[in-house]
Amino acid sequence: MTVLDLARLQFALTAGLHFLFVVLTLGLAPLVAILNTRWVRTGNPVHERMTRFWGQIYVINYALGIVTGLVMEFQIGLNWSGLIHYAGDVFGAPLAMETLVAFFLESTFLGLWIFGWHRLPRGLHLACIWLVALTAYASAFLIMLANSFLQQPVGVVDKGDRLELVDFGALLTNSTLVFSFPHVIAAGLVAGSFVMIGASAYGLRRHPGERELFTRSLRLGVVVAALGTTMTSGFGYAQFAGVQEGKFTGEGPAQVALGVMTLIGDNLILVALFVLLPLVRWLPRWRRLHPFLIALTPLPFIAAIAGWLARELGRQPWVIWQKLSVADALTPGLTPGMLIASSAAFTGVVGVLAIIDYLLIARVIRRGPTRLALGAGPEVPEPAPVPSL
Image 1 (spheres, helix red, strand yellow):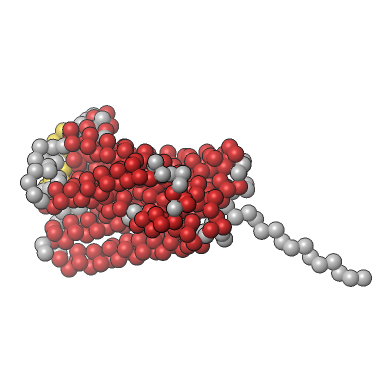
Image 2: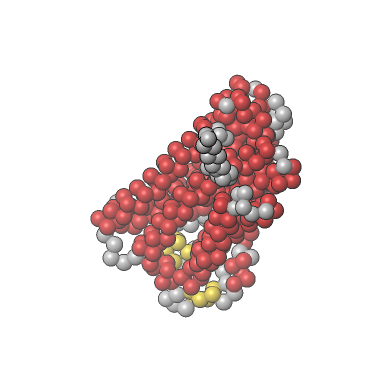
């Protein structure tokens, strides 16, 4: 393999694994906020335990996903300095805003939500988790803003050796951003809802004493899945109106990835709308269907990765469409040995974190909503024995 092939493979592996964390974060954040809202409005202890259970899964995924994002930052700086030199003033600005504004705000509000249980007023505590969800969406918007610029560079002038931003508004209204951002948000809802569906089906089989909690979770997951699959399909097909000419013609890897994504996505919308939603009241009691619901869990993640591959591979050989080739974006002086070593390190770190993430989430699901660390009340010390006289 050439140096360019190794660099592209490294980015594909680490970015793909990182995206698995991102899509689940985007899906679970609003679901946890909805559950928290129900608890605040009703005071129902079941809603509190649902918030803590799904919130703990969200926190695990978020915490480990942070580290995989740091790996992405290192990789871009090390391997793609040509991109930074040529378009850093444009491409780098949304990334910097995502890190300095959205990411730090999201982390701050999440910290307040995690450690604010039993300390903050319920209304203020609820506001924190909604702000977590909103800043997560803001973070996704800025990332998609940067990516959409690579797909269709607008609002810039070419100064020869670099691009100069002259119209920030053009970035915000980029035709490849208008439909791709809600498409990603909807894909996150699909991933989060199917995790909720699969885990709830498993919980109904393993923890019969928690029937009410997992019944409510399963029904919420089905409703959100029906909404999310419809939005994903609608915004996905709408993107083709702004696709660059020649991006998906022929028979290449981009077309294969696109076909896989479309196949899974179309089947998920059929299942969600015409199987799960009409049967939502009876699904918790139909144990024979529960293995099927569990088996659906990985499909939204496979579709999300396939969609990302289609979007990126279709742009080849350009890293910035018809302005900067992938070869010119590569850092000069890299050797195969250097890339093999960095690939082993970066992919190893992200891969191990993905495995740990899966194991920790699976452990929470197996245990069920007992012994949860998130939201646990302060321990009350036992009274000291009264000395006898």
